[in-house]
Image 1 (cartoon, rainbow over the protein chains, first blue to last red):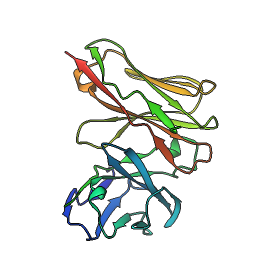
Image 2 (image 1 turned 90 degrees about the horizontal axis):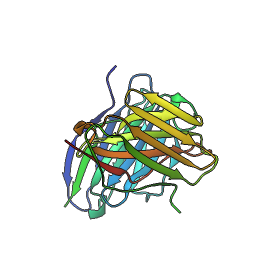
Image 3 (image 1 turned 180 degrees about the vertical axis):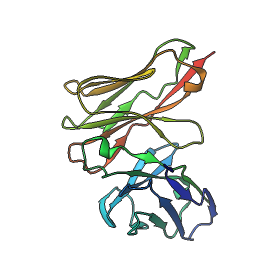
Amino acid sequence: KAGVTQTPRYLIKTRGQQVTLSCSPISGHRSVSWYQQTPGQGLQFLFEYFSETQRNKGNFPGRFSGRQFSNSRSEMNVSTLELGDSALYLCASSLFGTTSQSRNNEQFFGPGTRLTVL
Amino acid sequence: QKEVEQNSGPLSVPEGAIASLNCTYSDRGSQSFFWYRQYSGKSPELIMSIYSNGDKEDGRFTAQLNKASQYVSLLIRDSQPSDSATYLCAVNKNTGNQFYFGTGTSLTVIP
């Protein structure tokens, strides 16, 4: 079974621009979560989508948004980029997401998108 | 207080030894616990999940969960240089609305 895929793998943008990242979950997985990883803060939760609905949201400003399509693919968008948005953005898919307390909530990560804001 | 705490390390062990990684969590009602391995420049890879008190073994890896003491540990037996990585502990709180990750423990296995 193919793993989680993310595109693009690398991005370089300038301050003020916006960016859209894409994630395709493992086939059959309905939950997609997004994380930001930086050396100083570690893995920070952005949001989770399940069946096209945002179920949970972390403590990030409104410039960070996302959506999920009917085929479970997900996109996240960052508008008005800031230097501090430079990070590795990871998506993770699971069968039923975080509300399950069984192996159905195991999350599998994609390779990530490395975003650099200049 | 952080949701999940780990010693950042670095932890160094000789090849063939047992590496012991520890993690504590703050929400007593947490139900799901995970260990991920992350190589430098790569994304986290799921090693183990554990949901009940006690030990769970998978090959050279053993996860241990003690809900009363609110800690979860990972033992790596017969450590190999290829085990050198950062190990992340993750917890799904009782409310089940997101995973919380520790900042990771850096492990180096010395040949």
